[in-house]
Image: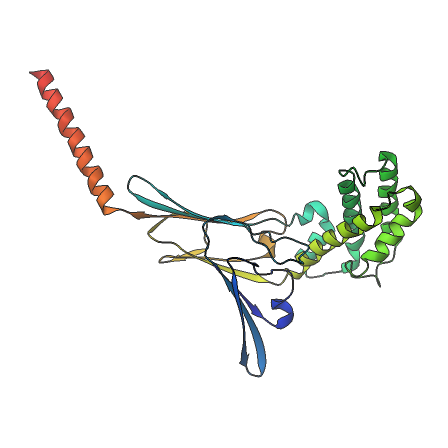
Length: 287
């Protein structure tokens, strides 16, 4: 498998679609200059077999969400090849619908969705901490905190506080301040890490907005099934963007078969043999 990212440095090296990291991946970085413009090209390649979940680096807050399964199976008349590539849905319209609308609209008014997104991030972090005994708090207190977040985001002016990532520490401080005496000692630190995680997740979705993906799969033999946009010989091609997996999963799949002449010939011989045996017994039966 080979990943190639092409663009300016800010787009190639940001975190919206990082390349796989570690064994068995090898990464090369080059530059191309045309008409006094520099284009960065990052290529990462590795040999895969079976299901593969990618990792994007030691410091990445958000795991890569596009696992792939590559496998082959022998059948009576040949070998089947299967490839399934997943682009996990970002679930934007479940988490923060107004943000999804802004991603789908030409009029991207950021102030309309920030309140909704902050409420999702804060309330989800509280619910996550309720599943850990070291950070679990009284249910009534947790409900009070969620209600406080709702009121906070409704009355806050976010015109200047535009970036959720940059304002996460202010957000956490303001949210926890009225309740800090009733919270476990480690609550603020863990709550901050979860807010950072969900903020980064949404930030990455936003950075994917203008990216385009071109995906090529080369399969041997005859293509049996696929949902590719087009096929040229043994090459299956897809072209898509964020809208295909903004909410639901986008799955690329293909199956091909390489027929075995020897197995087909053996199958024909066996079939003829069975026919001859059957004919022999029918003749005997009639006699």
